[in-house]
Each structure stands twice: as structure tokens, then as C-alpha cells.
Image 1 (cartoon, rainbow, N blue to C red):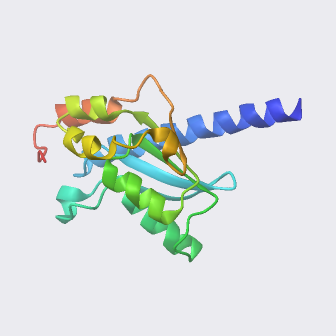
Image 2: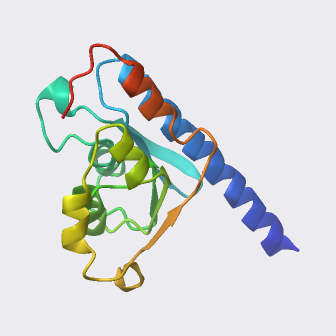
Amino acid sequence: MTTHTQETSSQELERAWMAEAIRLATHSVTNGGGPFGALIAKNGEIVATGNNQVTATLDPVAHAEVSAMRAACKQLDTFSLEGCVLITSCEPCPMCLSSALWARVDRIVYSADRNDAAVAGFDDRKFYDLFEKKPASMWPMLVEQLDLPNRTAPFDAWLAKSDRIDY
């Protein structure tokens, strides 16, 4: 019974974290960033958060996941995020997925997927195609989708933003 309770508690925590990642992504849109939010959690606590700042900082690698991982490494005073979970509002692009591999993140959980992102103008399919030669089951970490009803809220906000900078 304890295992079931722990599992339920863990699922509830991840749902709350995902809701926060989606909130970060939506908030990012209203503050000049892109529609992506992420956080790093360890031992049941949020260590760091990040949002997309590509156009705001003119930095093509300032994705939400990278920003969250950078902040988490500083907070934890380490370059390794072993024992951590990356919660992200959208399926990580190949760069962010590779960065998570380098950071040694244990798990990645995302909500919106690459197709949701493509509808909003963030079509990275040509990059994914480069990596799909190796099946996901061969990756050294578990990557899962947590489908929430509001998973596209950040993209909806993005598409509604009249002064967005498309990239």
C-alpha cells in the first residue's frame, strides 16, 4: 500500500510541477520570451526554473530547458544533474535533449509535443529526423509525455501575441 501511495503522491507532484512549467511558459510569452517553460526538481523540491529567452537575449541556445539546467547547476554547485527530473512544458528539441543527456538528468517529463509546437510555428522536425535513426528505447534516460488539458496554453498565448518575433 505504501508503494501505491508514494506513486500517487509522486504523480500529483509531477502534475503540479508540469502546471508550473506551463505557467512559466505562458508568463514568458507576456514578458517577451518564447512559449516554453521548464524546471528542475530533485528530492521532491523544485531546484530551478527557466523560460525561453532566445529573442529577448539574442541567444539561440537560451531555451527554457537549458536555462533551467544552467540555473540548477549553479544552485546545486555541480555540473551533474544526476538525481534530477527535468519538467518541461513542451517536448525538448534535439539540442535540449542532448543538453539533458550531458547534464545527466535522470528523467524528462513534457506535456505539449513537437506537433503542438509546429502548429505554433516552432517546427523542428528536420532536427528530430536526424536523431530518429536510434529508437527512444535505446536512449540512456526515460522520456515520457504527461498530457495535460492545457498543454497548448503557452502556444495559444504565443499565437495570440501580435508583437511576437517569429523564429
